[in-house]
Image (cartoon, rainbow, N blue to C red; front, side):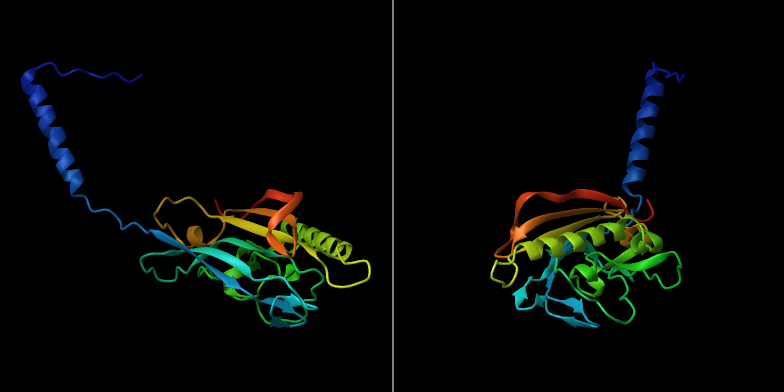
Length: 239
C-alpha cells in the first residue's frame, strides 16, 4: 500500500513548489522526436493480369472498371518508407486465367520479403479475382497463410461465387453478364500513434477486414441484397 505524506511546513512547501517548477521548466526543454505525420491519397488502376500479361479490366467486351487503392504516405521523407495501402476496392472479374508471370513486385511500402522464407509479397486484391500485378496492390503476408490457408480459401470462394453469379445474370438469349461482386479490403497496421517505430510496423499489416457484396455492373458501387462477406477479419503479421 502506498502512503502519501503531506508537507505542512511552509518552508518545505515553498521548496517543494520550486522543485516542481524547475522540473516543469526542464521538461519543457527536453527535445522530442519528430512526429511522423501521414497524409492520405488514392489511385485508380485499370489493370488486371490475364494469360501471362497485364491488360485493361475488360473481359469479353464487359468493363469492370478500375481498382481503387487508398494509401498513406509520410509527410516528411523517411528513407525506405514508401506509401502503404490502407484500402483496396474493385469489382471481381470472373473466370480469369492468370498464366505464367515474372516475380511478384515488391511491396509498395518498402518491406523486402526476398530474404525471409516464411514471408511472401502478397496481393491484396488477388490476380485470380482481377487485381493488378503492381506494387501498390502488394503487402507482406505470411507465406503459408496466403498460399494455402484461410486467406487463400477466401479468394477461391469469392472466385467461385463470382463465376456463378455472373453466369446467372446473363440474359436468357445470351449476352454479357449484368452482375458481379464488389470486394473491398481494409488494411490495418500496428498502432504506433503518429510515430513511426520501424519499417515492419509501418509496412507489415496487422490484420485485414474483407467485405464483398453483389452489385449490378451498371451501378458498381451500390450493393444489392445482403453482404457476401461483412468485414471478415484475417490476422496479418507482427502485432
